Image (tube, rainbow, N blue to C red; front, side):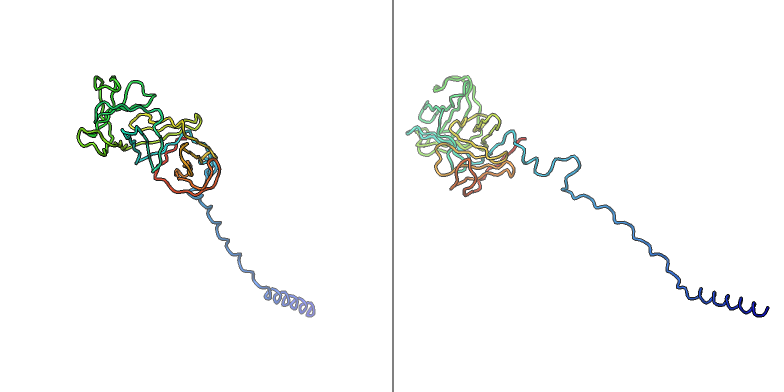
Length: 254
């Protein structure tokens, strides 16, 4: 009996010793919460929005070149009439008729003007749009004053001027792409239908323009950046050349 008791006591002691040697495992570490999803950038494309660049790649319906320095100049002695902007002649007077009514009074009209003409008084330095009158005569017609400044060289008072200049506060060229129509407009009237202009589309946003009398340069217009340049050392309808920025605001209609 004593021997069995000793064996049992010994087994209990060994079991207790083995349990005391087991290393306790630490509790599992807490996992950090997942980071929040990043917000899309302000300029990131939204679901269903067209990819970047698609809008600019679309061909515009039309665009307008706005001039702040356009003017018409006429020399009564030579009969020369020109319309100029940005230091370049836009029209050499094709389709225009000028009549001297008096030494200080002139009538001007484009051949497509049917029921009106312009009257320039170099003595008063004013321009009128005349409707219902007789071209080349002082008789009849209703007159509307135009916001055009008149500069006169020579011919003081009622004398015949050597030259007079009509300065437009606002003039522009508009190009309708699908119709391939280019017009020069001021005071609500077409001054030229630009039939003596060449135009060329390099891509949906890059266009070249050249008046047929221009030598060594043409104009380049980007409807994507809304800028215009005078291009030298280049070939119209081809990339390349040296660009000089023009002070022209480009408005685009898509």
